[in-house]
Amino acid sequence: MNKKQRQPAREKTVKISVNVHRELKIRAVRDNRNIHLDLTDDIIMLGIEEYDRSRKNLPSM
Image (cartoon, rainbow, N blue to C red; front, side):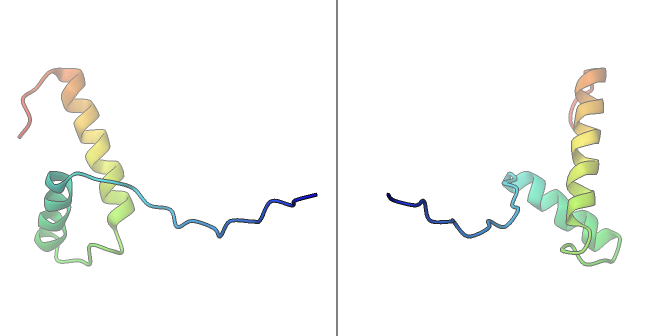
């Protein structure tokens, strides 16, 4: 019998567009903080803002 080999645990990653990454960097610089520490919160906030914008049918920035 062949036992399946356990695959190593994957890092939790999120693919984001270049524009989103640029926006995250701008916000980090503007707020004078480290982008890596607050990246998850920023991605969530950008998603919420984008969702709200699409619900209101407002043009993007």
